[in-house]
Length: 252
Ligand SMILES: NC(=O)c1ccc[n+]([C@@H]2O[C@H](COP(=O)([O-])OP(=O)(O)OC[C@H]3O[C@@H](n4cnc5c(N)ncnc54)[C@H](O)[C@@H]3O)[C@@H](O)[C@H]2O)c1
Image 1: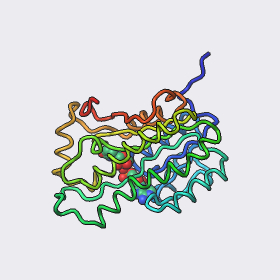
Image 2: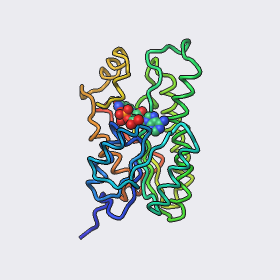
Image 3: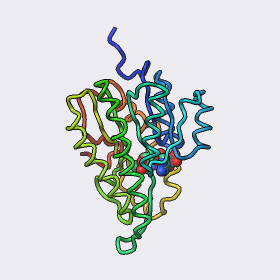
Image 4: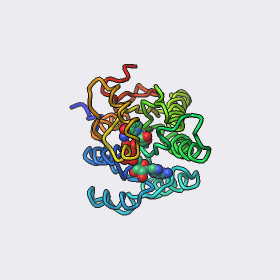
């Protein structure tokens, strides 16, 4: 019988941003497919409740602040010291930053915070993990970008830039590690039903929903299915690519 390439038995999968939304759904899915999931987030209470739900050991739970490079390095070192390997990284952590804010009104601090967490966090996390994947000549990296990075949402400039930057970043890294058994891809969701949208203004939400041909929001489980593929052995001939999950909004 052919081996099931979507199964994660014997694999260590680090899910950053696991406390909520898409990351939480991804952690459930990877665990259900046999992976040793390590959940990580800034939100310790969310991690504790997920640990209970999934029955994880304490060494499968790690707090991290993606806005702080030393915290990211400490996370990766801890996972390696506890589990010896990281087969796949799923990074869903992110913040929306200012919405409904015209470019003339954007302020430095809020702009910088959004880009630091979403984009620089992606860069430092990838940088910290790659040496361990290169050493084993195997790895899967899946970062969650956004439709905002492809099309741009008005009034969300810091978010747009951070997500467009992620899409550009994975393209370059994909080529750099292409011959080393490592793939790195991104996912560009449109609106997904998660707590993240609680902070998004009504006007922005209406704008985004109006552009989805399926006429509905996506569910976190639908995004998680895509991420599970990108994190699996099955994703072996696609790298530097940004997958779509937008209910038909983006057909490219
Ligand atoms: N929900 C959507 O409509 C949507 C659409 C497109 C893209 N996305 C992207 O999907 C990803 C997941 O979003 P979600 O909807 O599940 O949101 P969410 O708010 O439910 O989850 C995001 C998680 O990131 C964590 N986080 C925030 N800042 C952090 C930091 N500095 N360090 C570590 N963890 C941090 C939060 O604690 C939270 O658990 C994000 O990158 C988001 O930009 C979401």
